Image (cartoon, rainbow, N blue to C red; front, side, top):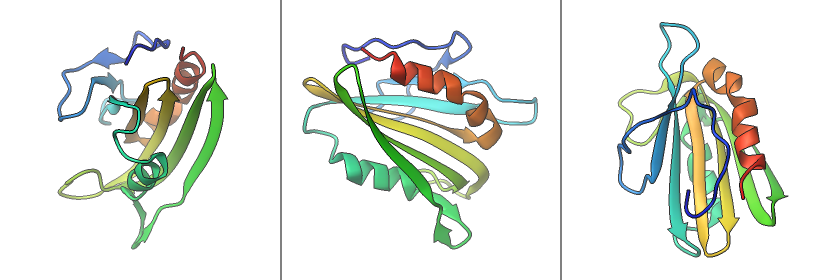
Length: 146
């Protein structure tokens, strides 16, 4: 991904990117037969393109609501293999980009990796139970990026 490699579970299934600026897209299998799959998306931009890190984390966070207010999001930063990784986690009613109606009980795990010469944006969004059940794999993916 953007000249970087990272581990990915074989259960995550590649799908054709459904929007502009998506470099890769995966379906993360749902928990249970009546639940939709989560979606993992990657975008890559040359360093300096794609907007400021904080503005992107704000935009991602603002796609989640708790009643009439924005849902609380957790943020963190770390250095992984010499690259700055900024993360966000949100839970609530997912408004998405242009969604007709909010999707309650959704969760996102997002990360922005500032790699040499490029910035990689990645996030998994879906039903909270599905995203939670894939948290360790998402964490391993970030920890293994190089």
